[in-house]
Length: 221
Ligand code: SF4
View 1 (cartoon, rainbow, N blue to C red):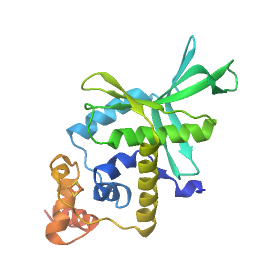
View 2: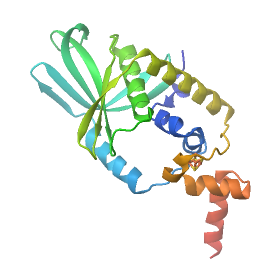
View 3: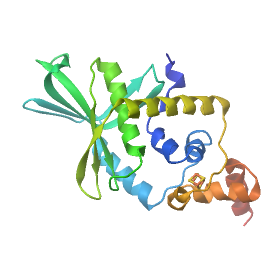
C-alpha cells in the first residue's frame, strides 16, 4: 500500500512504455517540450475533461474529468470520461438506484497504435476504478480523434501484469531519481523530447544542465 505522497501519475505509463528515458525526463527531470502533436492532444483532453461535467441518460451516467487513484499500485490520475452503465454485476452508487459498472474512455489525438501504450493507460484507469468502487471488469475504451473511432480495450491478465510490472519499475526509478540511458530506436524520430534528450548524449550533461546552459547563453545574448 502506498501513501498519497508517493503516488505517481498513471498517464506516465504511456511515456514509459514508449521509452523509459522519455518518461524519466518528463517525470523525474521535469522536462517537457510542446510540439504540434502534444498541443493538439492537450486541447482534445481539455475538451474531454470539462471537469465536474455530469450527464445522466436512461440507464447510463457520464462523468468527465474524474479523478482516480489506487493505493495498491501507488498511482493517480484523471479519466477523460467514465461511463457508468446499469448492470446486475455492478455496484451500488449513493443517490442512484440499481447497480452500476464503470468504463474508462480515454481521448487520443491520433489513430489506433500497434503498441500497448494507450491500452496500458486505460488498464491503469480501470484498475483504479475497480479498487475505488469495488467492482470487476475487463473493458475500457479509447476514442481516437484522427479516425473518430472508439476502440475497445480488453483489459486481460496479460495487460494487467504488464502494467503492474511497469508501475513497479517506475516507482523504483523515481525513488532512485535515475534517468535511464539513451537507447536509439525508431521511436526517437517521433519523440517530442529528442531535442532535450540528444544534446545530453553529445555533451554528456544531464538534460537539466543542458537547458540551464542554453538559458544562460540566451541571457548573455
Ligand atoms: S530521443 Fe529516443 S532515447 Fe531519447 S527520450 Fe526520445 S525516444 Fe527516448
